[in-house]
Image (cartoon, rainbow, N blue to C red; front, top):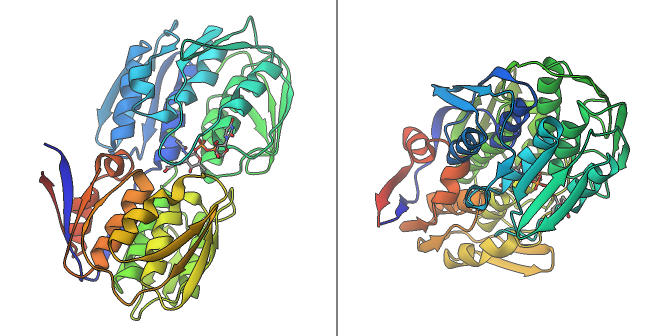
Length: 418
Ligand code: EPU
């Protein structure tokens, strides 16, 4: 038996929706707690499968992890274990984020190599090169990255590309290294700012936060922290696109509108009325959207994690749009599924040409990753008739209470065992 989502299209979404903490921040923040013995506390934690997997990983490393509502406490021992096994890493690629903190804390880290996934090949070369520059010995043996160091030394690291994961790995290794480290061409995503703020709260010395040059002066030790996770801009963006596609009216709260500036501007270009103030965004739409071009790039460019949702939006828009994907080579795989709903999408390398259709028609489709899953559900919400989405475990990894939230906003969707 597997869970599937059954959707009857045609209901506009209306109402208010609160956004939880960001998946792509909380997992790294949980890993960063390894840097200090004692009990750290994270608030605004989303109730998603990936947090459960990261909790399991930390427990195997000797931590005590407790969840109470949206707060988790992590008690880190004086001598954590330093091995992340393949059975967990294969379930969640982001497990690689324990590599930096374990190496810094234990002088060794054995982390299973995650391999590729449904959105691309996903290299780790920049993580490894950065650690080597700091004096670590890293080898890849029998499917594990085996890293060792007798004390990391600060270094200047130029990233070929502003990789989110590599920036985080090097940052977490550098905060307690001896001397100064500089990360040039660092990622500037809001989730990077979030981890920097948490590390500063633990006693780290980091300057240039939010810029592409991070300067880290190593400190001897860090202390536990209490930190609130930044809100999930991708979940917020998904709801905003849903409001536009279904010609509804959603008030999305608990968000940082400035972190969604470009996607919101795209929605305005599509014809939506967007108002933001404080931590709230209201998105209204009362006509068929205009198609909008999108080019994914590292932040502050357009996020790749909203690309499938915008392809779904274009699929029922007026006119045509060109979507260019610059981060993950296989992220267009999902358009084959969207085509099952009648979408007219042609891909060529990292470009997709979408010709908007007046209507989509419900069909069974398979989600191949989290964001593809979100895009397919949005398409199902506007397709005529009924759509069944398979592979919803991907969606559960990153969207807390997705079905229940959609039901509360007026969607006809249910989770059923197939
Ligand atoms: N890359 C390399 N070598 C490296 C590191 C990255 O070639 O050493 C390549 C990757 O293969 C990819 C590109 O650089 O083509 C970008 O990778 P990046 O390291 O920036 O991404 P990530 O850290 O693996 C995180 C998010 C992704 C999000 C990207 C970009 C987490 C757990 N994942 O991945 O989120 O798309 O940043 O913003 O934080 C998702 O939530 O659906 C998701 C895939």
